[in-house]
Length: 154
Figure 1 (tube, rainbow, N blue to C red):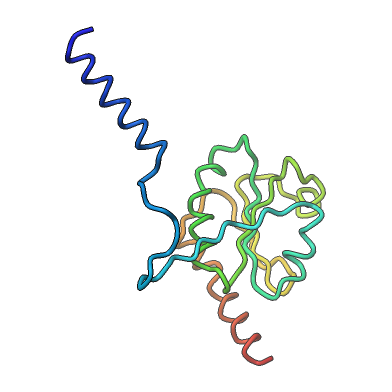
Figure 2 (figure 1 turned 180 degrees about the horizontal axis):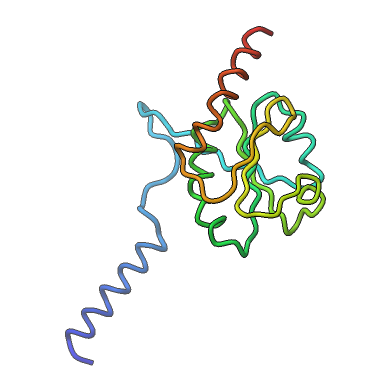
């Protein structure tokens, strides 16, 4: 093995070790800094849909997705980002339609990705296809405002 090949192999090994080890910082908050709220989307099932969506006091964005749907997979980072951003203002949830046929049938989910917005337990909007962060925030905006007003009046 030549020195150049050895050097390249060692650089590759170092990169792999660093990737496996992470950045070297622990995940505990450092005093004096603000921490980001990281909220993963709620994983829905046929059994939890009623409690998490229909009975929710907050508006709910439900991502109806399938593991074989590439546009659905492409939207995952946007859904996760919104879940953190909207924490406490709205729920963001995911439902794997392959594993939950009852809800798929009940809401006539036949195109993917499909995103449903629920307010006060009622489907108020349906979005089909890849949606960007701004489009989803726009779709949710009226429901976020009305949910906030309703909670303040209680």
